[in-house]
Image 1: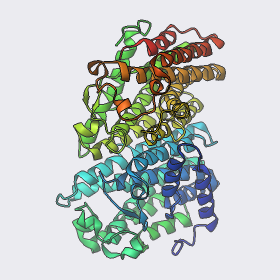
Image 2 (image 1 turned 135 degrees about the vertical axis):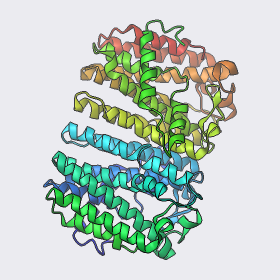
Image 3 (image 1 turned 120 degrees about the vertical axis):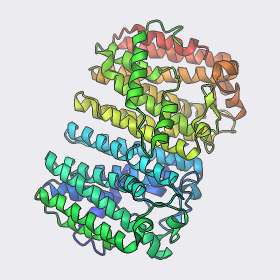
Length: 294
Length: 294
């Protein structure tokens, strides 16, 4: 996964993997299978882009990158929770995720709903256990909650589903994409900056970077869903289109969508530069968002 | 609902209802129906026992009861979220709740899953927005998260479902009941004490009170599920037994279950008295838990 991300220290990824494994240990007893389900989704091979962004954001404001590792892991738990619920039969009804059966297929629907809920709770348990200035921790909890709730990730997913099959429109994607992906990326970078000791202006700039990065990332995802191979995607090609999803290519075509993703990346980098934030990892992740092949 | 709860000021309940209404306002726009679903569940006529406990706990340590109103509302949101998800077809598959169609019946399953998630996020948004000493707020977030997660509410519900149909056993109810009900009651009282400015010892005593109160409350619920009328319950009588649920009457019979509930209430009151906490509302709520008829 690191082709194109050479500026991200290898040690970050292994630290994130170890920390996730530790924070979500298997618990024996009557609910052991619930633990297994949480681990199945959380520890499957993702890009870990959100935790990496948290570490890079902490470093970008002059902090220790590892001051944000638990926040990054909490966000990865929220990301895993949202994917589990989105994949459910009543929502997107997906059977495959990253080339493996989705959680409700590998386990069952009851376990998937509750494992998602438990991962969401574990995210807040992780976040509220961080040993940092308490006001920065409560601010992080607030950022995460706003990013997830009805005017964030969950609201975006809701509208994504209810608008399925309607004619693709700029109004719809302007509502869905910033919430479905941008909000959590924005919160991630802001939380990294906060826990790294950043100033309000730095945190605001990182939040703006994250929002535009997330938008670009989602546009690129939309494009890859059309132009990639099933092997690269780990799920069927074109399934967004077949489901009648609101996507950038559906509204603008592939070429114009690529331009819009690049525009978002320019804005993201501009937001950092406006506060004099020079971060090789954050700059490179921005390029990676639109140049990646999977 | 106040028969037997005369020590609880009437003004508390109206303040809680107004605050819930304000914290979960209808948001117009593409996700308006998601807002409506959240409000359908959150604002339906419940006993509001958890918010009342939060206010009473804050007062019991000498604080302003309203210092805990937002924490109480956050807990009520978590309670609503957990009921919505528990009622889903893949979990308890209940059609009625408090005499009305459950959320997935009144709306649909997709909306119910996401409205539950959004209420859970709103609980943390509410909690992290509280203007109090930040260390007490982060401690409240931690208490709530532990009460909800895989070793709390969600884990209890999971085991409750997987053990359906197995022979009722003390091991099962000893696992399920403290988690399914006790954990959130304990967190509620502890958070009330924390935000009311209580000492560590007072908060610990309130947590113990809440845990035993929750246990007694769940035992009484199990008994009412067997002995009440459908009109009183707002759902079919005996549906726990028909579903093969692990309940106190199934293990101990009704008479012994009533004794065990009373024992739990004695321990709850003893925990308060051990710290010299004299609270007429908390004492009366403890009696109400086992004397109520619905």
